[in-house]
Structures are given as C-alpha cells and as structure tokens.
Length: 94
Image (cartoon, rainbow, N blue to C red):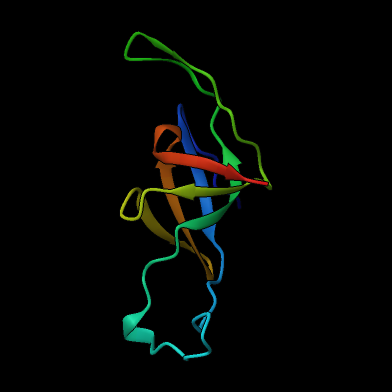
C-alpha cells in the first residue's frame, strides 16, 4: 500500500536533524525543535481548488522547508509522515 495525496496536498517524511550544536554541545531530546526540513514522498495532482489554479511546484525526492507546526502527522506502517498543503511549503532546498 502507498499514500496518494489528493488535490493540493503533499506527503513529507521528516529528515533527521543534527543532535549537537555548532559549538559541540549535545542537545537533550526534550530541547530539540520539530524538524522543518523534509523530503517529499508523494505529490497530489493540483488543479482548481476553491476557484484558483494550483500548480504543484515540488516533486518526489525534493528537500523542502515547511512551516514549523503545519500539516497533519500520520503513521503508515512503521513510518511517520506529515501531509501538508503545497502552500505550507516555504522553500525547496538545493
């Protein structure tokens, strides 16, 4: 089974963040912030949403930055994903 997003939705998988600061301090798990860089797993078809044309500008495999608390977190099998609207994606990391 796979997750296939609808309309203007994008399925993301969080990437691991560094666990030490630039100065070498190791961060406790409670002090870590939610990761904002994710990998695109699947992309919906876009189309006309609420009377506006939505063009999907990301593709599977892209690394993206999202709003920190956006989307819906889901667990599918043993993996955890976040489903967001394409408008919640702030940038593509190259």
